[in-house]
Image (cartoon, rainbow, N blue to C red; front, top):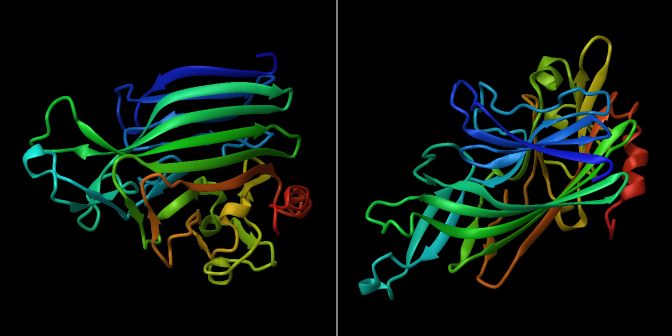
Length: 313
């Protein structure tokens, strides 16, 4: 590649000395843009930088250690599957999983979201495309044959398009999720699907600002409303400001926002109703991230949205 560099490295898990996490550092003309990180429980983008180099997200905050920067997940995940024993293969059971919290949550067994392949392409001087092949794996099962290990419950193609800029680095994330051998139901749940967790200094609870495209400000005004975009920004190093704008693609537009002053923004179509995904079907959803310097006004978020404006809006 001429303009982008990708470097693979390992680093310790937070609060650990063992090199457990694998990251792919993405740089553009020597400037850090983001890392693709594979954690123990899921894959995600962390760190994510503004053009001035401000780190915008949190990987494992104390209040919610399972909030991993920018990721895709769901904590209510039902699968219709037969037992592992061939002798009773005609029996269908409903298994319940959680791909959001790192351990058992409300009785749901924790799975993991695991990258099994990555391709990258420098499409132009200002455009990098990374395609991750991902498995949504169940937990290790008691009595399972060694060659089975974790069941692969769903497969995901996650396409990440990166466009570095002077005021904002633009990151498009498209998630295409497909069941493997069994039908899947997601939700209802408030903990899904695209999740963004801001760095502590940028949270509204610590002096930052949460605002949407309609000019509504603060958790009580923005949460559970419909808007074209939502932005969190706050004080960074020195007198700088920086933040993140989230814009749903047309595939995920028109749903209520789930945002909190402690630093979370979610684009979640499964908060009010279940999503049923049968074998042979695909869940195809996307968002755009504006990792910007300044606040929403200084970054020109309205103009950036108008330039993007999802089809059909």
